[in-house]
Image: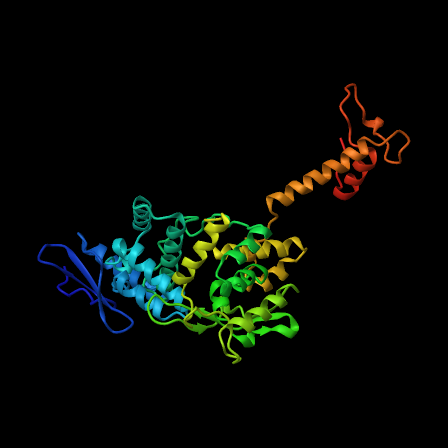
Length: 408
């Protein structure tokens, strides 16, 4: 047998460890040495690992085994900081991370997160009593963070694979009646009467209302311009920023609001164009907590203790829909850019549906009760052996033309 040594490998090295097992090492594209994630009982298995790594490098499919070693609690905050987020959204993400993700997954390296680990985390949230909405928001955040980890080549695939975990159907918001709206406007402190009316008939958000300045109320045109919103961080002073989703817009107001606006400006607002439309009795800008106490007294007095100010925005959009506004009209009025968001508000109220049914019933009854010889007539052609009334022929034919369905 020849005493010549076997030729040296052109890619990577294998060596036998004191334990007798074999280890594979190779040089990565960055010049650094990489070690196989496991050792092998046989030398040929270590060599086969190197053959596969070399093939991955040649195809451009190589994955750095050192990637993904950063714990999630170290990776996620950087992800939040690098995003162009509003103050409130960034605070929400940090809260979700701190309270609903980090306690279970924070110390796990990003590369070690697996679908079973994600399922166990979500079950833990449910066992802890987290709401469906909170669970969905936390899952969406984690999914987005790990999508970026895939783009950063820190992990191969996103382990968040639970179908439907990021979606939920929020509870339907209340719709106030018009008498309730005006009762609330009467019951609240007079300086906030206009806030109630704008929340309803302009469908403004709380931050948009509190961000209004005199120059934004275009009295002569009967319009309000939404150019900024009051931003209240968890700590620090309230400041003005862009409206939610950059929803700058100009809205035409119902005519009856002109007198309300003129009275409010004359009574409560300074003469400067930059004077805020809504200030507290001592001249401070209302915070959410302070306003909530004022609102709470009004809604209890009116007998709608569970109605939120934001529900009035929903009321206004529902009323607008009943005027025949299109989906695009509603999106513009709400300041929403997505159709999905606007569709939440586009539905008929129950009492309107009942009114439609009553109207249809009256129409059919009038036709059935018409005297003999009436142009509508009774539909004797469709009469059977029983005495049940049949829809008049004219009505049936009209439905046929409208639907393309032949009557039975």
